[in-house]
Length: 433
Ligand code: PMP
Figure 1 (cartoon, rainbow, N blue to C red):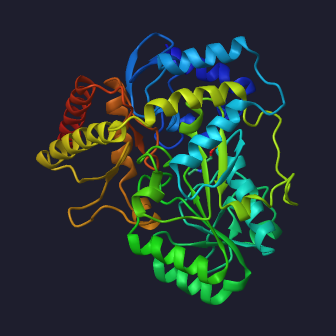
Figure 2 (figure 1 turned 135 degrees about the horizontal axis):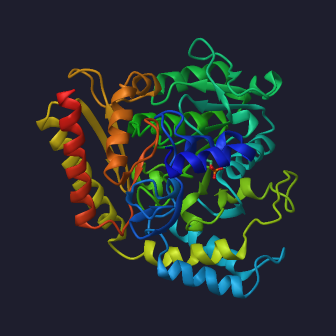
Figure 3 (figure 1 turned 120 degrees about the horizontal axis):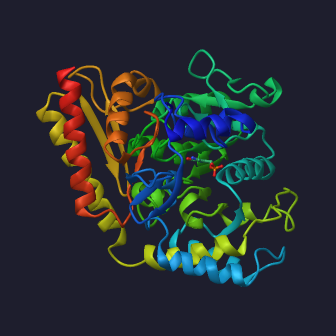
């Protein structure tokens, strides 16, 4: 007898490639069958048989206020009553733009898109248009959505020009993308020495959240800022994940760095499809209709998404909001770490603001991973065992050792204690195995 989820997955696979509309949902890394969810509230998410899970995925980041927050839902209902999309300017777009520009000092102008991918893709085009240069620099293990120039990983050797890592990306596109090791200031300096006057931009996840979680050094960020300024390249912070997540001013607030452009997504739409890119006025004025870099979107700045975002920002800007979420992360991660230490499980953890990373390393000598190679050297089998043990106990973690955990303001102490207790049970099983 197959389970309900197995049946649903089989049905989904008939007309949807792999049964999913985004690959990481398929449980490819962790094995097993994805859970089909059908509703959520606060810190909890429920499957089609109404089994309850404490959710640390939060739709991959947006749900920092918890699921179905009444204020956000009311805003969306009111917006729907007024019509779904007009294809004209609205005051809601102005309001979201004003709010973000007020909060994030590096952002003087901002343009909305419908996804993070569009935001990064458009920021790259803008940087190329502004500088008149073609080459872009990205870092190994950083994910910036699925546009062609960004689906490139390093070839052999540190400063090699990349090869496409997705089929369907012409080598002619990929040859303009240079991939460097993350968190390595010398690699950045060497790259600028070699190609400085050809580099349009450097795009970086200022805190990496797509190879588990890496908080890079201040020196790495200082070097990026210095080299881009000296080399006349645009520094793009991809804060699609970290924006309004690690703190009100995102990773740039944490490091005290002013990027030239910033990409946002996830949280700013409160769970509706949104992205945005913004930054220095002089650069942003190069976008159509002001300038010659074309960028557009039928549903960009959609009223439902904007009104959901406006409602969400009301809570995000309350004093102490981020401290509250960060305290929950500290409580949870320290609790899990302590039980792992007690049971001799080689767990390493990272946390900042509303985000955390858990790594199963192979021996007691190995410290918290600091780059892509160190992340891939982790014990993926152990993660998978942990993931499934937690899932069975009603704890929903991201189904991949390369993803992070997301906390919401709605997670209660009972939720966190239940999660630590579940982890202790799974660790005990792992230690006995
Ligand atoms: N940049 C980063 C840092 C991301 O984490 C993601 C998505 N996880 C994207 C870009 C792409 O965003 P979207 O999935 O909305 O296209």
